[in-house]
Length: 146
Image (cartoon, rainbow, N blue to C red; front, side):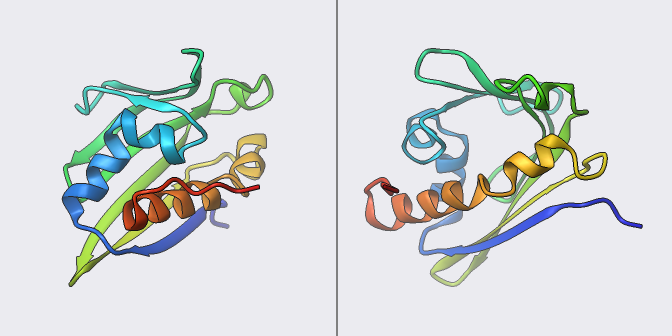
């Protein structure tokens, strides 16, 4: 039996360079990733943290793979939630594939120990993030969900 995972694909009218910058740049993530600013030196083994506007670590992990403008793999811990902090770190893989004037972004969130609290919490969390990323890159404006 395979472990559960979430898989998302989105096509964005942008370049791999701009998409990579939006994924790894704190000035961008604040606009589409629940107002969090991403921090890392983007080297294998280094920490990655998404901080709230108050500076608290909301999401934490470690960089597992980096291929700029193509692939980023990290571990993932929802640090802000007492129940999800108990879960073993899961894994998030971002893959960028250029297809003419668009990029196909595939996000896979996997390596869960079954249907954990983290698995359940992120089920509805990635769609607004990826929709916001697409909107921001294609229009220059953040997506506001009422």
